[in-house]
Image (cartoon, rainbow, N blue to C red; front, side):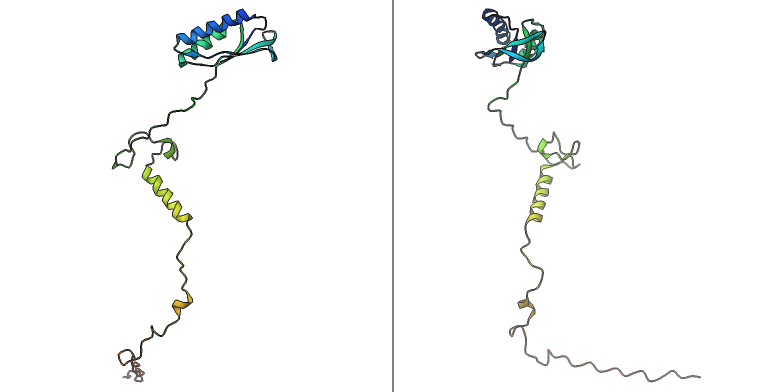
Length: 188
């Protein structure tokens, strides 16, 4: 929590203001660390006809109900020119638990919520197997082709092993020529 207090507050009154908000935080199950008092600083612009303010930073941990109560009280306190409650992320956020796989459905719709990583667009259900199949297809397209479709010169030239000796069974006799139709139909 960052506070800008009135510049005319002496140290005792500053301590009284900080004690009041420490009690609010502790009442809501929070814990307050040692406040970091930066002292009197010039403001970037006037606030309530004040050109200076006392900057105080108070790190604390509490439930969200304490934030709402602090905000309410800080707005009506005349000794506080400005305030800001900042929510810091936890040092080690808990890892999300994996969602159990839904059983197969016959209507093509996945039961239960779809994890965010699997959504293509809002409102369209997608199965994990469909994503894996699409990724496999993309991987195959990206791989260079290892087989050549053009015949190599070695495979088109006959070798001595591939030529069989000519025998009567393998040599075909030429087909007899068909006689030309020299006869014309008779006229009557």
